[in-house]
Length: 226
Image (cartoon, rainbow, N blue to C red; front, side, top):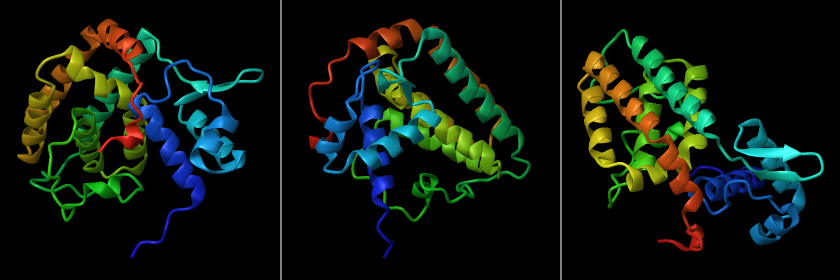
């Protein structure tokens, strides 16, 4: 049985979940005391978690305003998608030995979920989750821990925008399935071409993605969802 995670890590995970689902809205100031009360903890682990998230560029901090949810500009989102594409291309260039069917993953706190022994989900995962896991798999195959951590960070920063993608673009799930199939078949040249096409498509939709993200209603508490 795995030991329980430290309280600070659990608080960090819960706040990050609220960011990735849009429960904490773009640009909104984060009331540390209210958030601590909501999570049933003191303000100390909340401040520590927000400091970690600031270092990961998921929240912002201003001396008089405090912490707030980071709001991406069109240019920042363009560069973030472009950076994810570049990381995937670098990872694929390091795949000197074809890895068919399974990827040798570095065991980090979040990549551990890539294990082949994990039970298959009873329902299809959302596209944002599919994309995050696929790009982690590609990064893990390069056997470079620094590259893997960079992809983990991009996954966190793009999580909410990826959740918005299916409402703006058609064929998102099919693209991800095709990418995964090409990669599992060790067709690395075709995978690279598909990775480039996948990201170029999203770069064209950046204005609509941001409009959808900013206009979406988040009245339902994601923690109450099944």
